[in-house]
Length: 283
Image (cartoon, rainbow, N blue to C red; front, side):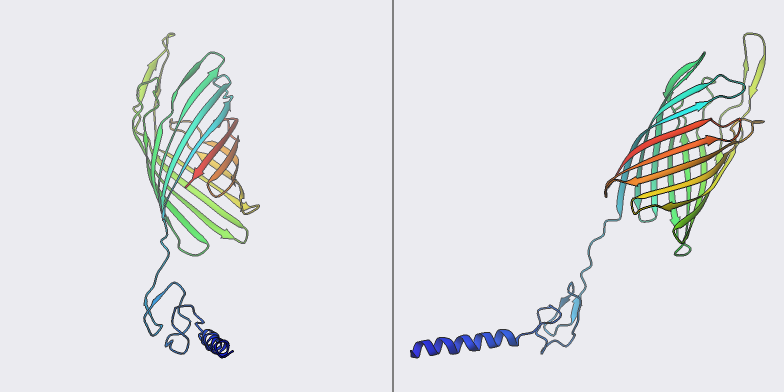
């Protein structure tokens, strides 16, 4: 009986001590001795409960994505027969905070009534940086190199250079956007003499391209936009190609996404229809 009373007394003292120990901010220092209450849980503290080192989670700012896709373009120009072009496209991007790099290329197959060909299109390598003048406005500027991987029949394809800017402004649920691209065309002017003796000189010029439109997130994962686009021809004395387009992107999960693009030609110099589908992986 005496031993039982001792056990009960010790147990009572032990439980009283446990209940008397309170550490509200979970820093390992009892509240009665804590001189710096409410320190962040991730901070390292001294014996007085005051922060001596802040632990911040490591954030990975390096990200990448890879996209593969298919594209179909049909054209029916007044001076040429109906032409169908099929492309297999590839694009890779690298992102570090507001800086990004891009590589894109494609392989084409073209068919018409009296002509067919296939091969690589030109390859684009670009570098971009995004600015944030305000919480709602972002501006991206970039420079690019267009490598002459396309085998031109005139054997005059050279490296071109492009300079671009893109702006997006958030207005409630919508973003208003516009872009401008200036391309320095370095292809050589070439004169071709045909079998009937007729000669024609292909003369090249630098080009301007711009677009503007509006987009919105239908859901957290689905974004759609529509835009008007105008691109000057690389050939002199040829009108600009004008199109209206619809674009959509859908995030399947945190890594996989897909995009769909369709453009309808408004001018005689534009392709009648241009549709592309891409599948991407972001990591």
